[in-house]
Length: 259
Image (cartoon, rainbow, N blue to C red; front, side, top):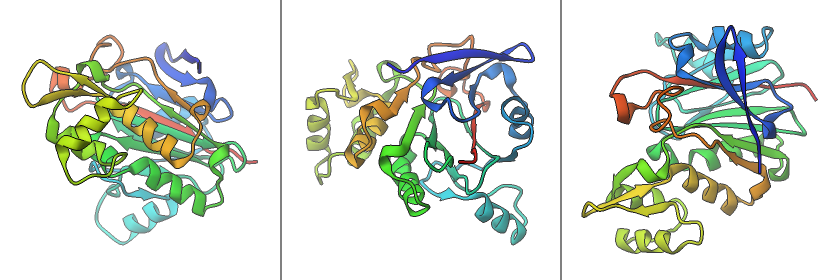
């Protein structure tokens, strides 16, 4: 099993995963709110440049160069996307989340990294496979990737409609009939679905679906780590939009290194 460690910066707690040991990284807690990523980067690697996005629950993945280009050619403060992939060392890439899954990826050969925001919509739109395709186009091999999914809402407390479950499930089980997709998901050995007492509802493990997408791509189970924390059930450390209905977030970031 992969281990997760608590650390302190300026007396406040954040998490790291041993799978991502080669890279400065952290899944920061609500205690850091409302500090922005460029401040949090100081905790990881003070010499790195910080990049963040305006997240839109899609599957667009950008590089820092593309972010800079978009901002230079528009009046927006932030580029619209849900993933960032580094191109050179000392680039800190950040995503915000409240119940959605923060995903940090590192490549042990190239030193490059990615940060993704994978809510149910992004997961349905296969944001992780999209990002990995991009990393491969930049020279990554699947075997060299290490993927850590941070604290997010856990399946046993995340109630969704059967329609939503089918939409997400379609990313791993291709079928036209939503009921058949849901039935097939239930039958998987490590099913990401749990029963719900309410008709037309199920409980959904979004991180479990992302893990299944990774395995279908050919990423080994030993290359994937999932944080043993649920944002909804750990109020002392994490914001949960479902729990509080507040527009607050926690940040997760990782810094590319030279190889």
